[in-house]
Image (cartoon, rainbow, N blue to C red; front, side, top):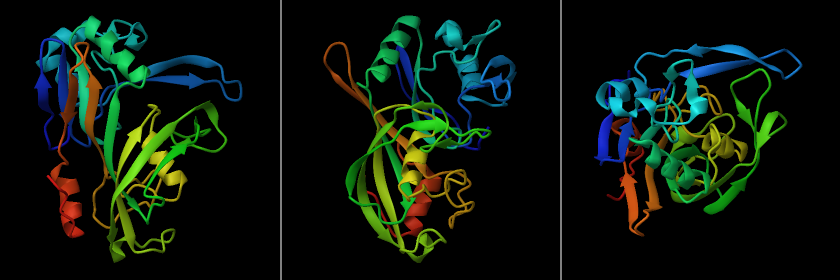
Length: 268
């Protein structure tokens, strides 16, 4: 597990809001194989990664063991107990966990109906223009790869990401073979759908990959992050009683250090 610890931001009898550090996988993955060329599914295996968020959950909140979708159960093991949504291994930020089946269904419906407002912070190469916009590009699985693509691929699904640039930061560190302008753009992204790698591939597809994202951008970054500068900053929704709830998670030290290096102090 990463050096930083998983922290509880908020908890009540129905849910937990956790701060997930970068480097922590949310849950184990069940690998589904396909016959070459046929697209036919064949039995796969369960991939284990030590120190997942689910391992931490089961140790500290064992009541979530039987909470979740039947489709996430492999044999007698619930692969995603209480997990309503996920974050990439090297993305930090807030994640919600349901503590009972009723609240699991409630939260799941909020995500599926797009009533859950998701806000991410990202630092990208270049001067992203216009300063606010929507990227509406279907995302598909690239054949023979774990990468996603907005070009031709398998299992294409619609994907929409809204964004707003907070600050253009001038710096020679932004210069790469692909980016000829000495600028970074610090922005907020608001994904309207929940596709794997969505924000990362969408920003890369418009020529502004996220700093530190070696899968969709430069293989190295000038700050030695070893992770993408992408942070799930907040989740916001209306509760059943009409009260508006917002759960926030501050930028971790490694990302704050990057902004300090660039001479930018975000408003607190």
